[in-house]
Image (cartoon, rainbow, N blue to C red; front, side):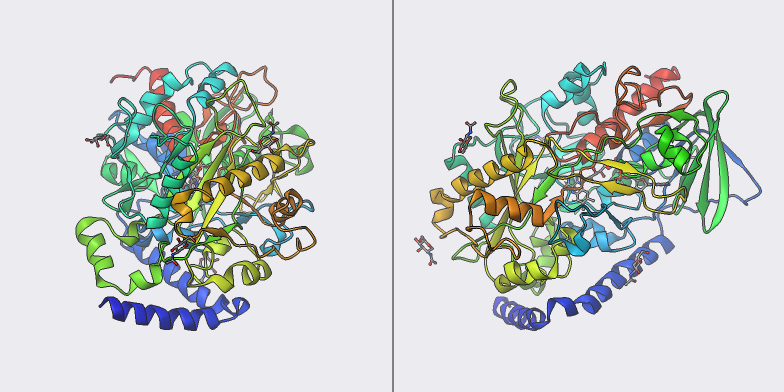
Length: 629
Ligand SMILES: Cc1cc2nc3c(=O)[nH]c(=O)nc-3n(C[C@H](O)[C@H](O)[C@H](O)COP(=O)(O)OP(=O)(O)OC[C@H]3O[C@@H](n4cnc5c(N)ncnc54)[C@H](O)[C@@H]3O)c2cc1C
Ligand SMILES: *[C@@H]1O[C@H](CO)[C@@H](O)[C@H](O)[C@H]1NC(C)=O
Ligand SMILES: *[C@@H]1O[C@H](CO)[C@@H](O)[C@H](O)[C@H]1NC(C)=O
Ligand SMILES: *[C@@H]1O[C@H](CO)[C@@H](O)[C@H](O)[C@H]1NC(C)=O
Ligand SMILES: *[C@@H]1O[C@H](CO)[C@@H](O)[C@H](O)[C@H]1NC(C)=O
């Protein structure tokens, strides 16, 4: 059986790697079509009832939540715990297909109908080697938002992140305040865990990944040899190394839908409406008070009113869009688009993201990396998943092991606050023959053909340095007043005057090289792939100048946009919502999702998004006198 799998995998590899990269389109489209169809099928047999009223009937609820993001899904669940409250959740996308529950599939979904298909604006100073010279911004469009299509890494960030939020004028958001809300969501099953930092009983599955390639283990060993302690990164200390904790239960993805919506879908006081794209929050300009929302479903316009509040949870990329479409945003911008100004606020003027660089690979002399093609031909792969919730199909799409470090370049006052995360992947963009993985990281054909294609079938791993507190920050604007047109996202990567962002990533590259040089990895002859990136051949390979050129050629977003509706006191001119998540100066309107984050987080963002939902729910219950009911 093993031999047969090996032979079949070899044949398939030979066939697929012989197809020129530019001709992969039709094959990719077939795969996308299958995934699109699986979406249609799932929604035809959905777990959720479609209960749309006739267009002539206007509905009224106590609360309307816009967007089934992680935060929005938590809110819909927690608010409808109060039997006397009625809640409407409106989500533009559908129910995610069962295929999204398989961890390795994550790389593919950003090309399907489960994604908004966004790209950042083209800018001259970076991305010359990217597809269409633009940074791709995948964005989940389905129940659960990004939690249903992301790479499933569960990290809460650093304690100091939250203490700084509080210090910036946000009482109630210190680490001590928010930890109980992380715990409330979490249903953990993690072998190495710090006491007091995890909860077994919450609805969101969080677990170790049951399948680890040998290369992932060896990387963690090498990091330890390089001096990094093994840590529970969601525990007492963050700086160090560990395997990824994942939003997973029994080997399958846990998303906001399966964790927070499906279990309560029969509640009489909760309506969950799919395919409902909210186009506007209705606001009485004179009274500065929101009173309803307008949405489009099946190409028809509907209106819904509410008695208590509307909560926008449409995510960092869409919540600011919706506010601006409703007249809340930078005055000049709104006037430019003839949108009547209800309230002048700096919506979208700050746009944080985590930049990374994924074009650095290492070759080993033994097959200890991921070999999914061969595994797919082994029946055991499927029985392992079905009967034991383990095996290669539980391997995360993007990573296995992580390191958090602090470079010597920033913020020496906070030695426990890391500024770079190293993301180890047991594979590389050639692992799926250039079909999806590289599309997610927007690596263009020429770079792919030079750097990765020659290594198909070889044991290659990748380490990507992610900058957690970049100096450069972007912004977003409306492209037009059409709610169906994608806004403009301007990343401004590597634009800080001292070029510190680049310098820090280069320092991280040196640190990666130091780790790779440790005995654990050298036992397998680990060696950096020294093929220069097209366009950077004029620099001596591995010089600082070379790395700067390479990073500017193919930087990538790690899809952690935050801060577009930043939280802070009303007299702070850079903020949009207060510490109770109320939009400054507008009644009965809150934003509850990752867009309120006041300062970039030291980690991935989905865990904080759930926390913001939990905390937001209690803020709202407290406001309406229902806390503890
Ligand atoms: C490919 C990818 C990989 C990632 N990997 C990880 C990871 O491994 N770990 C991690 O922690 N984070 C990861 N992230 C990031 C993480 O998933 C997001 O930060 C998280 O989902 C929170 O995002 P959000 O609050 O911005 O809301 P989103 O998740 O963006 O949700 C917003 C929701 O609102 C809906 N919506 C938007 N506009 C409207 C409208 N007008 N009307 C109705 N509904 C609307 C959307 O369809 C969507 O469902 C990844 C993201 C991507 C895209
Ligand atoms: C898949 O769905 C997306 C979004 O609806 C659409 O743009 C795309 O054309 C579809 N692709 C295929 C191959 O069906
Ligand atoms: C923490 O680790 C211990 C020891 O491995 C284990 O018994 C316990 O179940 C773990 N707790 C969680 C929440 O995973
Ligand atoms: C920081 O560390 C790098 C290498 O790790 C070294 O080359 C550099 O000189 C150090 N910078 C400072 C400011 O100490
Ligand atoms: C891999 O390289 C290491 C270091 O050079 C060497 O000790 C080891 O024997 C090699 N393994 C194989 C299978 O060639």
